[in-house]
Each structure stands twice: as structure tokens, then as C-alpha cells.
Amino acid sequence: MNVMEEAEQAVRRYERMSAGERAGRLERAGIEVLASRDRQKREPGLRVRYDVEICCLYALRIKRRDTSGMGGAQDSVLDREAASTLFKRIERLAVKTLYTLGLDHGAVRLEASGKNGCTVVSIDPRPWKGMTDLSVMYREGWKQLQSQLDEESQNKVTPVLGMDPEFLLVQMPESKIIPASRFLGRTGMVGCDSVTIGGRRIYPVAELRPAPSSEPRELLTHLLRAFDLASRSITDHSLIWQAGGMPQRGLPLGGHVHFSGVTLNGDLLRVLDNYLALPLAFLQDPRGSGRRPRYGALGDFRLKHYGGFEYRTLPSFLISPLVAKGVVALAGLIAASYTSLPLRPLMNTTVHAAFYEGDRERMKEYIPALLDDLVGLEDYARYEKYAAPLIRHLREGKTWDESRDIRKVWNIRAGS
Image (cartoon, rainbow, N blue to C red):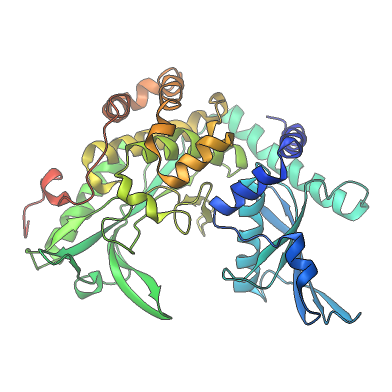
């Protein structure tokens, strides 16, 4: 992969999109855009804008401009460390905006307003043109990424995978969610995770955090150990355990997969989106599609302290051993071989909309070609034992049921 050539190709694809197609993709991803007609209607007043320079999914610089609308303006540059929370929030939105439009590099102007905290004012897909300081910054970023990718290609390192999939504890028949914090702490191999409702932080979600591994079989063994610890810690055996995208209305679940030993880049994220997230969306219980776009947006990632990254798009794959094993196997296969997987159906407006809307019929025709590519990879034999049953399910057009108690399919006995 030549990073600079890829950047230029992405810009040309972006320029071929109509304004309506760009707006539609951003809206489906939950990104608010300030339309030109709305700008003209506004009264003069205080405006806070952020000009964000993104290279390789990373903010090179964020400039803040406070303007009164009466000719006065005050500019400053945000410091990544000093303005940590604000910097990360602005960076994530700018990266997501570009990524949704097929770009990994560019400039985004944001304005502090709207229900999501910021709206997109404008996008420059080639900010490095004609500006010496920016051109140098972008070229240095591309050079560093290219060096990392070349080294990985030469050394053929096996990626290390981890995970932290979630599940709910539900009291039946009233479908009452029982907070996981009643039984689990916040840290450790089994814990609880938080959500904020009405400004109040609560811990309703249970989370498994098995030790990572480069071997799918070992990672799944670690997952079973985490399940065993959870079954001994959750002492109310009358509760059922539910997984998937959104088994209970209003409380989405994630199946985050962690990667290390492989460099984060836009191409890898797009392969994960197209070859893993899209097939899983086809398999998912349609009731779980309400999780998107606030959660489970395409290309959603977080950099981690250990030097890797967390891919956050997937729903909780604890729905069954077949699905969990398949996700682990395909994630490992993709991380090892993503440069050999060329299809990008999610760049098609119809498929992009189908993913966010949970429209299985519109996704269906694109799944076989994706599966054929995966099976045809040189490394597939290493992952086939766990990947093949999931691929068979996908070819048969099956879906999962988020209402069931996952303890039964995992063979977890009460108090085991």
C-alpha cells in the first residue's frame, strides 16, 4: 500500500460524491451538519469554531477560534494534554466525519452547537495543498505510517487479539434490568460497565475481559474462564443473561475487539467494517439495529494505552459460542490478511443505508462475495475450525435471537 497514493484516490472518490450523498452518509452516522441556509439565518453572536487537521486518523492540530460575529476574533491552539477531554472529543468527531466520507486525511471545521456538542461546518479534503507547514506535517505522518506498514508486511507478525463483550442481567417475566454492579466490581476479568442516563452514571452492564492471545483457541479458553468466574459471582440464578445488539430497549451492548501487533489505519478499519461488521449486521436480530448510530457506527475505534486499538463497531457476540468463535477467528484472519481483501460494498449508498437501518434484504446480495474472499485467503486454514460454522450460518441467511438466555447455549450451569 502506498499511503500517499491511497490518500489521493480517496479524495477523488469523495469529489465524485454528490452533496446529497455526502450529507446522507453523515446523517446516517449520527453526524450533524450545519447547512448553508441555516448559517445565513443565524443572528450575530458568539461563535466557537474548531479547525481540525487530521492525518492517518489522528489530529495533527486543533485551532480554536472564538468570534463575536461583530468582527472580533480570538485564536488559540488546543494542547492535546492540557485540553485532554475536549481535544479527544473534537478529534473523534473530525476523524469520524472524514472516515464516513471515505477519507483518513483532511481538515474539518466544527462549530460548538447542536445536540451532539458540535456540528460540521465544512470539509477540506486536501488541506496540504499550498500550505508549506501543513504539507510537511502531513507528509511526515504519511511517511511514518508507510514505514510501519512496510515493516509489518516484511515481518508477517501474528496479531494479538483481546475483547470485552457485554451482557445484561434481566429479571423475568417483567424484563427488568438488574444492575451488574450488584454482583460485580468495576475492574478485573469480569466487571461492570457504565452508562449515563439523565446525567447520572449507573453500572447496569456486565462485561467479560479475558486475557488476550495471538491464538484463537487460547483466547476462547480465556473467555470460558471469564464466563465461569461470572457464573460464580452472579449469585442470583433466577436472572437470565442476554447479549446481542440491544436485547432490552434503550440499553445497547457492544462486542469490542482489541488488536495489537498491527498498525491502525483506515484500510484495516474499512476491511473490518465490510468483512466483519456488515456480515454480523446481516446475522443480527433486527431488533438490535436500534443501537446504531449512537453506538456501533462504522469505523468506531479507540486507541489503547498498550499501543493497540479497540474496534467498537460490533454488537455483543456472546449471543452464542458459534458466533463468538467465528468473530474471534475472522477478526484474527482479517488483521493478518486485510491487504488482500479488496471489496468495499459499504461505499455504496444503498449498502451504507442498509447497515444503519438493519435492512437485511438489501445487505443480503453482498454477503456471498465477502465470504468467498475470506475463504480464499492463504491464511484461512489456520482459522477455519472456528470461522467455518459462522460462515455457513451467514450463507444460510440465519439470524440470532436476542431474547434468549445465553447461559443455555454456553452450557453455564447456575452457580457453576
